[in-house]
Image (cartoon, rainbow, N blue to C red; front, top):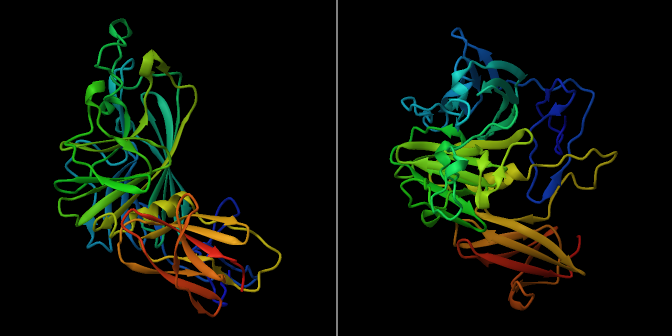
Length: 424
């Protein structure tokens, strides 16, 4: 594999006859890579091995991670090498990291993936990516977890699939004979009984941040638990929730591809709501009629969410690069349409005739910043959401690009209209 400058790029070949390589692509743009018949560049990197005690050690340039098959394939340790070898797993907590646990009220009460040993299969063994398959059981139901780590990638990806046997009841026992719709207390409110993926963190006096549409909030709740409609707490996780220690020195961000709820408390570790089954709102029965499939990811980090770039990491995870095979490459081996500084994010690009409208969101800074466009235009105008034009921006023209300076308040939006936008 050769990049645009003619340099060889390390490769990894998979059992599915696919090729993995680490691509560097400019923002809202493309980069061209070429396959050759030359020998691939030798690479050293990520590895996974079985230890003498039966546990598995996964190691990349960023992490050393231990998986314990005897206890359901839970993660016993996550050491972040470049974060002062910080251990992120709470070794003293009664719950295990990446443990599945919930109240199966018709099948003996609280059950956990830790209750049964798991089988571990190494799907990929570096040097660029590690994939470990965990096969386990919880309350008689089979599940799999694919844990993926990549060389140079701070994110730890987990893909969970649970093949349910029938329709088990999961949550607080609703006791249908005593359930009344007009009572404020409802058994399905309390997430501590639902099936959770648990993440006990080695972080003191924990604080919780979470994203919302064009916003990030810090939770002031002592815990997320309630059981009455008149005591509802905001426990929604839209895309991510981030838990830090009291001074924001270290943190762990949890991403999910499902809008669901999270659990957390002073004496309760971070948990992701995976499954509920039983009576719900308006007396409806929320049953299970197929497998549960969910993807989530974790990023250990230093600093608060904005300093650690958590918003951008979440966007990168949910909107991965797209590879296209072509017979010929374009005139330029790499090109970017819009470049924004760290903390800014392009939320939309639309075209209105010959005009290009670029909407930019500020996730955490408030300074004047430069925005660069890989196209030409006769002028740039700030435009309101209703289309009304406002201030005209000064454009600086350079070879094959134009730029302007813009100020956006924190969590603010600005739309720039490039008039008569076109290629150089």
